[in-house]
Image 1 (tube, rainbow, N blue to C red):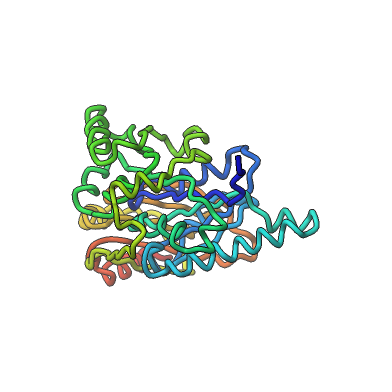
Image 2: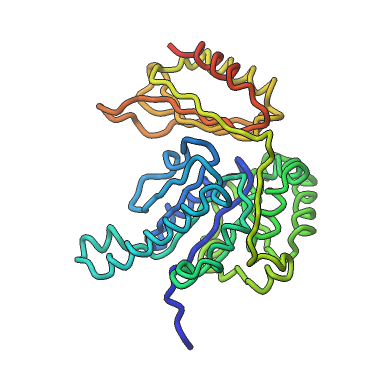
Length: 334
């Protein structure tokens, strides 16, 4: 039997705020002994997820200002090619450099607005990529709180579930048991092939994520015969993103009041928001993340002595009034 020496690749997908980065952190913390190259894709012009990942030896490449399945797909091909060349160079390098250059697998975390089909397609229609990598599986994270609404309103959410080899259902502790059963039934109706498991803050068996050999081209061609043809993909015109930045610190009390008012008014159209905040009087970063009206925050790592303390907030939603958001946030600065 011929041994497949190609580099295994996993596509980690799911709609905005489902918990992809939390799951990715879980994978990176696991004592599996493998070096992982991570490709991060953000829909907006500025990436936040790379800052939210744990610090380690992993190689992290960010792809911002576009969706991995359309505007920056060429960048994906280039980055995969560069990583492959780096890996090859590492195999012939000294032991010290080998550790810096070599990796065992690739995980691609797509933006929440990505259709996974064109991303998966890259591993079959690009000859160089096909020779260097094998697509192991598409892992889709679904938010139990907002999943039904997302499946109703966004075709990307349907595609993410339809192409999944494994479905991980997050935030089940925040909804009633009957609601969990309802969304599981709908997921099975959309994709009867993929096993469904609950995942709490990214905690799941690593064997359900890596080296599962879940992606079958034959099965995909049954549900989408033109998969290997050119797949066009467009986003909803009314979905956009913008970034708020400031080197001035936030007044925590003012910010909490403003964000509460903001979510009450715009929560239904605010699909995703996340950020690293510089709070007045706090030597540590504050990390906030939210989906619609569900927001959470926690302390992150400490600011380094000579580090520029800058708050960066990313908002993604439908026809958001950027000026209103920016003026309100500016009023919360010290």
